[in-house]
Image (cartoon, rainbow, N blue to C red; front, side):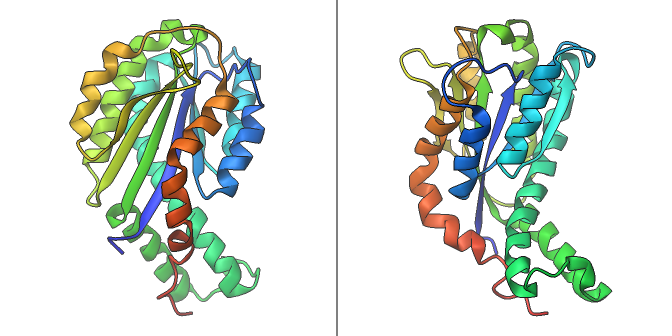
Length: 242
């Protein structure tokens, strides 16, 4: 179990994409390649940003992931709990795919209570002890200008949540839009999570919001890993007997 690796992308944005391919279509492509996308949507007020909120939810749905809408003041407090929720969600997605094959499209609730408990315990163990490979994709477009300080706090809390896991974690961070490319990989894959602190000074708002292209560029960065581990993820229930 400890050598099983789950991979996910966490997008932090206000949901106002305005350049390139639709982020919903991009999320579908990423999910087809075995990467699950989770989205934290930041708003200035829960009464505003209806269009942005709708986009955030649609990206997560298309990417097989979980979304959460938070006000700007609450994003840092949300990050640690959100990371734990997304890990559980990612594992559940993989396990559910396996169960659909094993149960031949029957509902998990058709299983006896003891078997459902076994599945719940398996998800908990995978969430805590399996390896996690996570790319944090952060919107630094002009519309995010007022949210930058809170984003820095969120990155710090993200660091804490990764440290709290028993399993190994490998992290990369990308900002978009990039200076010369769609995204800037400001932190390449690393297990030294403390390095997050060194990249905060580069979180300077700029330009438009190419969320869809940024998602696809992030997938390209993850792709060698994605291809090699997708089948291993699909085998998460190989030892589970109903």
